[in-house]
Image 1 (tube, rainbow, N blue to C red):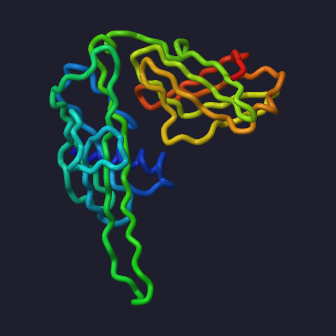
Image 2: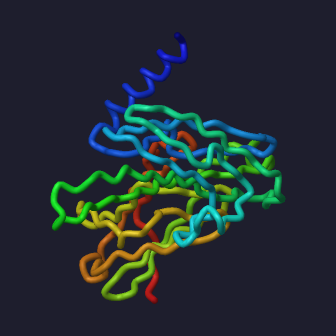
Image 3: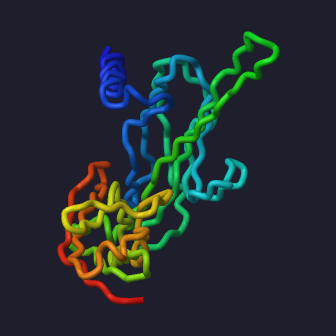
Length: 252
C-alpha cells in the first residue's frame, strides 16, 4: 500500500509542475555521485497518453554517441523496457569503479530515449510521423576531496568583459573543482537586460574558463557601467541568484 501511495504522489507532483510537457519525466534534474557510492536509483514516469519503448545508456555527452559506442564508467539498468501511460519505473545507475580525477568533478550524461508506437495512418497518401525523443540528465562524479568541502561557487566565480566590437564577450572563470551550471546569465546596461548567444549548455567546467557572446552590445554599452545577474544551479536542481556590479572591462 505504501508503494502505491508513493507512486500516486510521484505522478501527482509531475502533473502539477510538468503538466504542459509530454514524455519521460525524472524525479531529479541531476545526479550527484559521491566517491565511494556503488549505485544510485532514479524514478522516472511516462506522462504520455500512449505506451512507449525506453532505451537507456550513459555517455560523455557526444550527440553522435550510441549505446554501442559509449565507454562511460557508469552503467544503467534496465537498458530497454516498455512503459505504459502513467507508468513509473526505477532505474539503477552503477559505478564501474574506473579511475577518475581526484581534484575535480567528472561529468557524464544519462540518456533516456523514448520511442512511441507507430499507428496506422488514416490515409495512404499521408505518411505517419513517428518522433523519438531523447532526454539527457547530468551525472556528476564527485571525488572525496570535494565531497567533504563546502565551496560557495557564487562568490568564487570570476567575471570580466572584453570589448570585441560590435559585440561584448563575457569571460567566466571557475577556479574550483566543481562544475558551474547556469540557468540564466544577463548583462544589465542602464536597467535593460541583455542575454548572450544561445548555447547548448550554459556551464563552466572545473578549473577552466568559458566565454559568452553578447551580440551588438558594444555600442550600446559604450561608456556605461555593466552589471551582471545570473542564476546558478545547485545540487538539488534549484537556481540560486547571484550578481556582480561594474564588471571590469578591457579592449581587445
